[in-house]
Length: 351
Image (cartoon, rainbow, N blue to C red; front, side):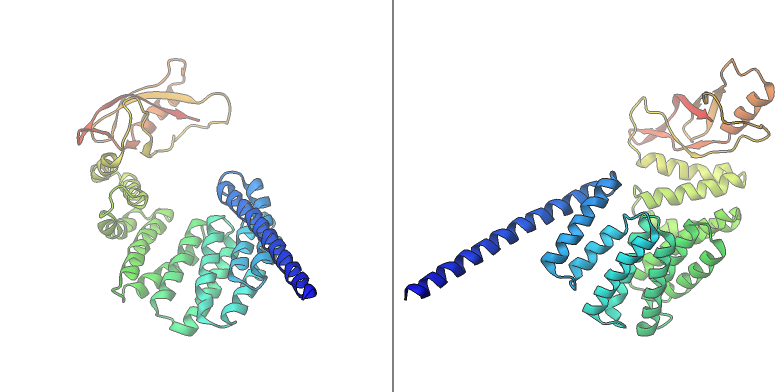
């Protein structure tokens, strides 16, 4: 009987010790993961080390073949600067997902899409495209070439290609996305179609086809206007301002300047930032010295009036070029009590 109680007590002590040890390890893991979350957008070196610790501890706590370990591997990989190192941990994550879901399973699609999105956010564009394409292949195999999910992935790849300036490739994917998503009526597909129109408009802007940009941008704005203060709605207005101003149709841009201004809350002395900037033409400038500050007033429609170039700028051609440029700038005017108002004492620094 004594031996039995001794074994029982010993077993309880071992269990308590293991539980305490597990609790300490979990606390250390949580601390590392929290530090990663806090630092990933501001202190990449700190976040990278925290992500490494969380990944290594997580494998011990949750097992190397768990979805959580795969997620931790992705967190660490997206912070690594060396692409070869990043690929090692990303491939490990994919292998883990495959062991959980099956190599050719449709359940692999969402993890691959998530990988593509995370890598795009971290500006690892080639790796991002690789995982999006793998997701697209699986999607086409399981759901078909014309499925809404395939259209969504085509849209993401098109956006990625547009962002890095691969315009021909971008156009091909954006057109496929538009054609596919237009055949569906669910909320997700309609939202994707709206974004497709925005990106097609921005493709035309990148090609300097300003007239071609207007119709798709107006189509996307029709839906985005439901959320007038949203960043993507403001972006849509800015795109249209750019198109109209480059076509010398400033009157058509005015409504979009006012729409942006109506959503902003600015202090009385806040300097306005341009929503459209014109280049300084005809002047050969070298990078040197202090910027040239031009003062002016922004009127109720976002136009520049009464520009003042510093008196020390003696060259007539430079003064004329600076004035010609600033007069083509457009601003979102300040609003007070729901009405657009004039903003004196504004300035812009030409570098």
